[in-house]
Image 1 (cartoon, one colour):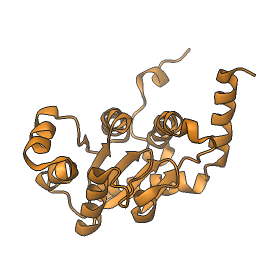
Image 2 (cartoon, helix red, strand yellow; image 1 turned 180 degrees about the horizontal axis):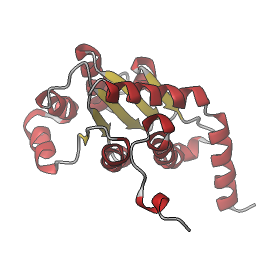
Image 3 (cartoon, one colour; image 1 turned 135 degrees about the horizontal axis):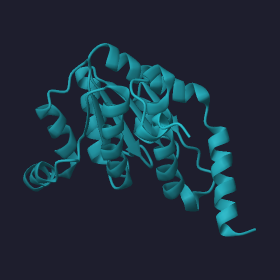
Image 4 (tube, rainbow, N blue to C red; image 1 turned 90 degrees about the horizontal axis):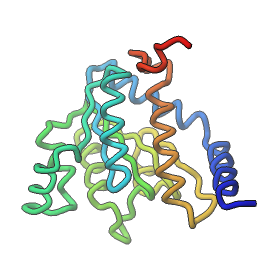
Length: 199
């Protein structure tokens, strides 16, 4: 069997192991956020930052939710990192955005944060801020879910079947899962262009 087929088969097995209920729970938190007039803030580092930017576009356009990506303004982000440090950069951005109890944080992370090993400390600071102000917290995460799984109101953990592929499988399937979520009938608001073209 080729590497390509192995990887694709592994992806199928991972998807089969994700509980539907976890996906539905994330959808419900986001639907509730929209219904109460809250905003959706996407956070991630590395590939997660790319997902955050793309997702904020789609949730605004397709689900009708006021959405933002914490990392989209590179000038502000790097100023905060330079002046105040990486660990607080995202949380401070959210404080300036007046994150409140009607809002929701959506985190993309490979491991969900680990305080003992000081991994993803910037995302952990965001999670703690969300809890402090009463904002909802959701996310899509790999490995065992880390701090995110412990703190979130709802989250989806992408099972780790092969430790060598934890990052590519997690980041690849994060994109699939948030596209599933934004396409969910409970969040349906607008039809995407290609879906509106009849064949």
